[in-house]
Image 1 (cartoon, rainbow, N blue to C red):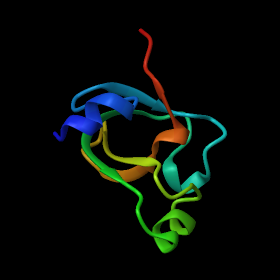
Image 2 (tube, rainbow, N blue to C red; image 1 turned 135 degrees about the horizontal axis):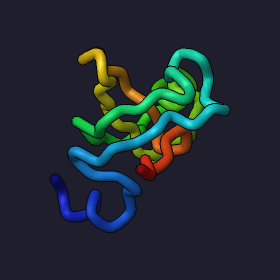
Image 3 (cartoon, one colour; image 1 turned 90 degrees about the vertical axis):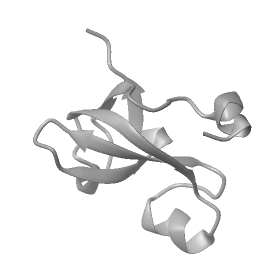
Length: 81
């Protein structure tokens, strides 16, 4: 992990998260997942593809069934037990 990731991203490796209920269907709204990768959106094409802005963090999340997808930070929230 780069130093700047510690400063301005909301989640880190292994964090339990929920996909927000208002997220687009392609991101599996309401589902529980774990963070397993972190990157930053740097191109307009990527931002458009993920319905977010350039500079936003994007996370690879793994669901309970073992599948994984990339989800922008704006569609994730911390999981509270």
